[in-house]
Length: 113
Image (tube, rainbow, N blue to C red; front, side, top):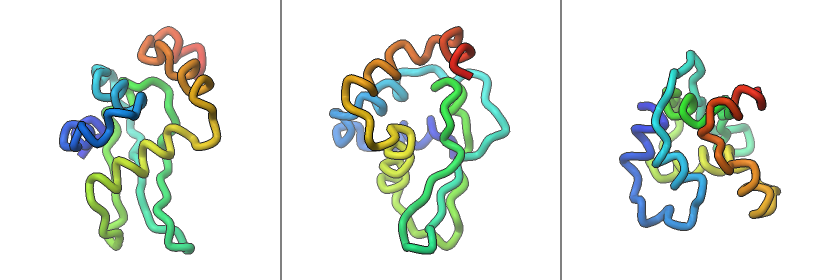
């Protein structure tokens, strides 16, 4: 399952307040990469998500998601963990808005990379 597949299977009403979810839902998948989003349980019992580095939203939508086989997690918990990792807790709302503004513009994504 890719991130785009996960987004399409989510209860959208639950994410009405998430600008990132809304932006990802409206973004067209682009090229894709050989990266996989990896989800596992850390030693402390916390869900960890890796490989969510954002080059462009169109690319990350095509990334397959590899969930550790020992992790019993719902699609909602999985999407919550991935969105939290991508949003990078600690940014203010205005900082996040400035960062994500026009981020599906491939020219801007190339400059950031």
